Image (cartoon, rainbow, N blue to C red; front, side, top):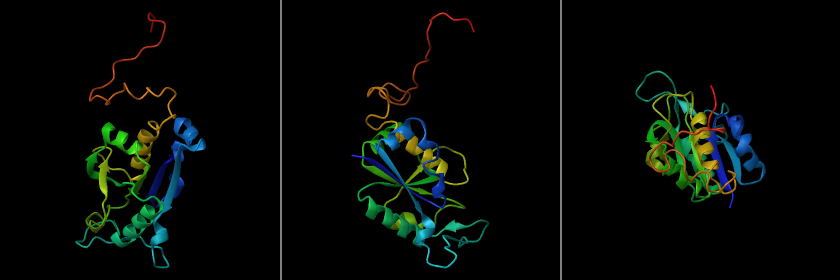
Length: 190
């Protein structure tokens, strides 16, 4: 089974990005996972390919439209039925190693990347979307968070790390940080 990552974004050229190198890049070349960025503008209906509108209650910035997002999410689920849809948002549940393990054990994930002032709330009312945060700070968009989530998942896929047990005794696997590490020789001047 190949893990399929579908990223719903306004910037598909950001993918695979750094995930095209190192362990994740090698795994991508070997077909252990696939990267399918989906341009959200492809679901716009006007000649400007608009995906956003002004906030209904006023205020600065723009909000991603629920109708466009809904069509993009529906398309992603048609391509990869039964896979979770995760929205990268600062108000989401913190990403944990446990959730990463659950995701990496499945067939893949659909990641919805926010921009501007975020998502029209109706997308969460109309679709089964899990909101996830990678920390208490604000980025320009969800793409960097998607890269973090995917890197954490991809390294756990079978055959990506050298030894199958490499990920078993790491920080956060048992709720604690990993012990300090040293190289050889055991005595060295610094």
